[in-house]
Image 1 (cartoon, helix red, strand yellow):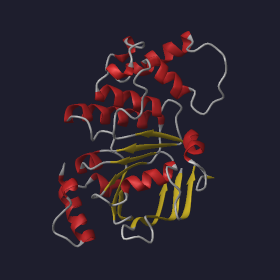
Image 2 (cartoon, helix red, strand yellow):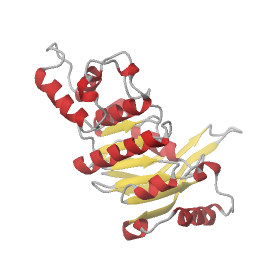
Image 3 (cartoon, one colour):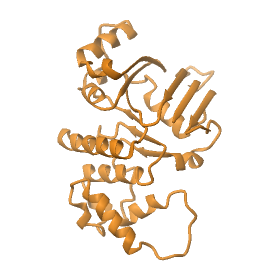
Image 4 (cartoon, rainbow, N blue to C red):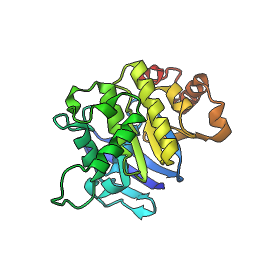
Length: 264
């Protein structure tokens, strides 16, 4: 469902600020894989997601989604293949629009615009049923402006919008990092439910090692722009935070794990 072959990306090439963010990354995700990605600051995690989403072009290598080579496609042309949830709860929704209007926009993403009426009764009923699965009481607030919701409610709504049309690939960029622990746990629970229900191929960045271990069928650790560790199956199920810290020490050659790695 996702294939990267020898992907390189360097920022500010030829200057004193040159930074190789991706260093020959090759990665394959099969249909239905739920992969968590961890690593210290500057490891290349967000660059990896942005490269897949087409936020900026890669220097070399290739990227395919669902068998389609998207390496040279701009971000808006990759949109039909991808659902994405950002770290900032404010980025995935239109604050001045109603909940049902946000959902309607998501449902029409990538489709031709017409002059037909805005939201039909059947659509409204569908949105209510979907919102019920969040268990946040939003199904009774369809006409509430999204800007009035809490950060957790907005992030849960963004997750629903990102998966409304069952994308080939779901990208989660530290989507619970800005939430309090209780709300983050609820959003992660909802994430797991939606991913399993719709059998979505998912790539989730997190700084929380316990979350990385608890969710998904595969875990990747990045270091200096490359994949330093790739664990799946029974080996992942047996993982502990201590195991990951030990692996990080081996990979980095340092006894001091990055502060962000210790936030768990």
